[in-house]
Image (tube, rainbow, N blue to C red; front, side):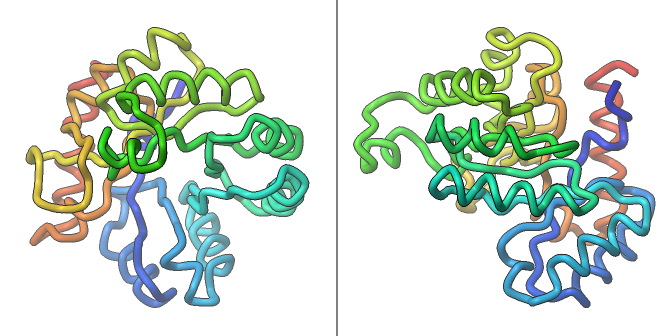
Length: 233
């Protein structure tokens, strides 16, 4: 059973360790699970922040979306497994790479990125994939599951179909969450909090709606309340 308050993952998309620490202090007990990605990687303090988060009792999601030849990604995941990491992302576009990574993941839950929530059908078409994102997501999720991944990153728009196809136990983590509805930013396939969880999401990733709020901790608590109502616990 996933603890209710771990279902919200805050996107710690900041460029320095000092800003990361300030956000953790600011959010306090309203957030217990943090995603750290490429922006923080360039600070040079990525793993220091990772270990500090774990030391403060927070769960850590390493979102670096690894994508390379199978041996390289496998070695990277093997090294990452030495750290206190709960989730890690790889791209879900290469069967051999996913299988190699799955063999080295240890206790890490390995999540395959299906189709970025900033992409729609026109973006896929530019990549030579003339299909609706939903079909691509389902196919990539099936391949990820067969390769030994623990779940996927996908829009909440696909969460219902993913849950129906994969049943319980396969993790569905949804970024692109907009609690107040669509916004004019780079996210295209968005849903609100209740829609994601009603459809079958296990976790949501929220960044800007919390970071840009006048009271970020209160915004996070409001999302926690929505989650509790949506999952009925």
